[in-house]
Length: 98
Image 1 (spheres, helix red, strand yellow):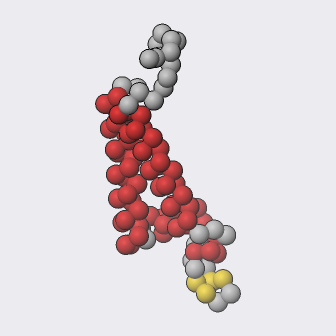
Image 2: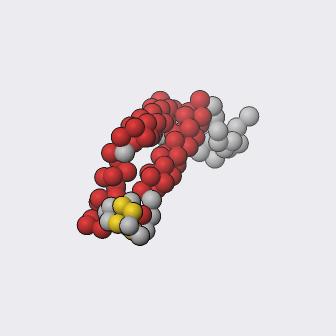
Image 3: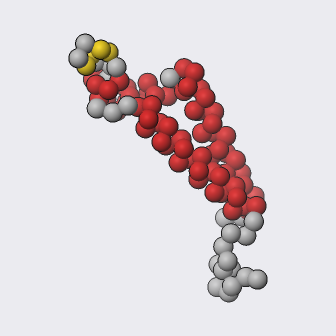
């Protein structure tokens, strides 16, 4: 992948994960949507008299945060690898650099 494309994908993944995280932190739109898609009718059913999203057996906020952190780390790796030659072996020729 060319360096420009790698840098663009890195910036895209970092910025997208940050925007989704901030929007979900303020509104819970994405967590609610994920919970409704996965759980269906069981989403937000009372558990021991308390209405919560744990009626599905998991907390959708934590799953969303985990995925966003993975995307952010992937974006950081792509951004760093586009800025400097990370691979010590030239992939096209199979020879060591430097």
